[in-house]
Length: 352
Ligand code: 1HN
Image 1 (cartoon, rainbow, N blue to C red):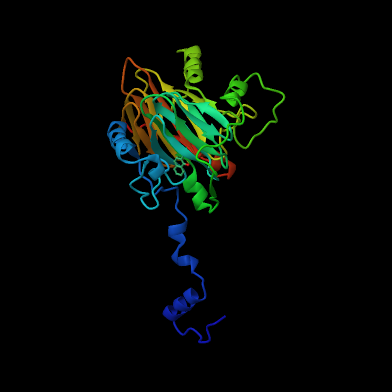
Image 2: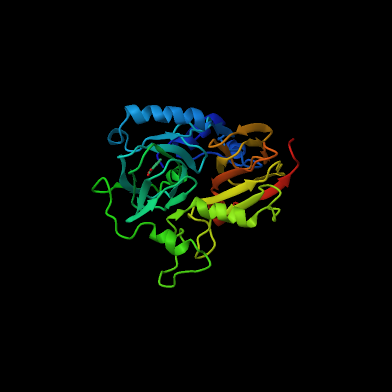
């Protein structure tokens, strides 16, 4: 207690409260407790064709020695500084050329890569080289060493998904560079995928783990096979069509502690029901074109675009084609919301 003078009126009493390092709650109630969640982030679409051209420009002018990672961060207009895609999760697009190496490092943030185009690059994760093909989902769980290397032809481009906005908000961020540009290879290529991808047949010599999935790469061919086997014989959900979630083969849970990944097929002519949930979601259009209506705003998307739906926004998906499938890959922070008791969802009237 440093104040010696006694407050004589409200104004000086407020000043004294502030000097004492306190704040009167009655002046903040409305700011702290909203009737329902309101995100600083807004619904937004990032157009791949334009971004790809800009990224390609920097493949000519910026070396990976200079850049460390050649990435365009997808920045939400409501989250400019520091740049982020949504409040808890981030998306960027990264390009690497033949002969290049994105140097090995690790961070506390959980991350993944989702391959957009190209062939012949590898991401090495904790000593395991994982080959990358379009549509593949590669995991780099927190504190796993990872570097990217391209040995084939043409540019290789992928989506980086990370929870660094959340990790930084929690002030839980750690980062470390490996002592060499490329880490040592310790096991056979793609071993974790080959061991675990056949989910009903579990290798008994491996210790179960539940923090994150042991699978390094969820290959696109498995998704194709699943959609093909299901065919048109399932209704799917009214909101998301034939929606498949990527799981940890040990416990059926999300692939990362903070991020859940999905892939959904919207049949030709699909028009989804509207709903909302306390989940921040980023979508990548794997195939097709259509619209997602978010809080009344129409987001038009085409192949390889990315778009976001901030938490608690009403949204409904429409496949824009009567003859072709639309396929959306998406990821969200639902594991966090569920683990912390914040998860809610509700169906709402269609907006269109
Ligand atoms: C990161 O480590 C990578 O490893 C890509 O390729 C994007 C964005 C923010 C922070 C770390 C990578 C990233 C990142």
